[in-house]
Image (cartoon, rainbow, N blue to C red; front, top):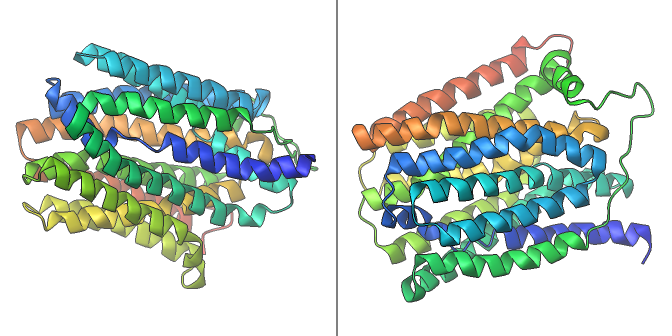
Length: 399
């Protein structure tokens, strides 16, 4: 098999890796599983904050590791650590055990985060097909969410027949398939800029992103904020469904429907430019987040599910589109690190806000938690939009 064919095979192997990693059989019952083990909503969000801080802490070092020592090796390490985290979770029976599991999975997630997208983009760059990135990133994200949707149906059945903990052990078997796909990847060559090569030291990359390239700075902040908003919704969705009294079976089917929604809109994301400019797309993404959270803040029944679906539609479009925007303005030799910075922002915002929202839910009301989320993500999104359109000087503004 020629090197070009191996690079083409990378795309299919990445699809396999992502499908396996997202076949999360435990997700439709994960919040209920935590509650079954005595955790409050605040403690659940603290556990997720531990995961996010673990990802955030290692996000930049792992991106640098990927840029320096290779995408494939980084992904293999990430998958092994992820599987170790789920082994701990499968054995966990208390809050601190769950914290240990989340930290280990977070470390594994940091090695995968950004590296998978960087390997895809660099493989296409070697094949001179980088114009296909947005379409393939959208399709890949679509496969991920479709995989999670199918897993929700099987996970609900496994939980009802064998218990919630059984879904974790079943998922470990699926992850082993993802590890095989990762092992079969081939390392793409990093295409360095012919002119004005840049330092790839972490502090120099941070300077480039946040000081030198002001446009990239605000886009990374915007992209990270939107990612944090959709991640927060993912963890509060089951809280809301339990709040309005839905059954376990209904929650499983709704979880599947939500992920199918993301899959469909991620699959079609590359078509948005036929009708809208880049700025218009991002404006709609920000407004969708604000309306979704504000609508939930005023809902007390099944009507609120419509606003959850709205946020999941935004998630499907935003993830591939915003990653593509970042990739367009990032040199290849620092791409994984810059994508890791985006992931770091997502995790820092989430780990700061989610436990506080959980405390508001436990102390006051779920509606007040949603209204605070609408205000926080609205301010971050609108401020970033303003800077991208009118505040950035000496860089191309968004059209």
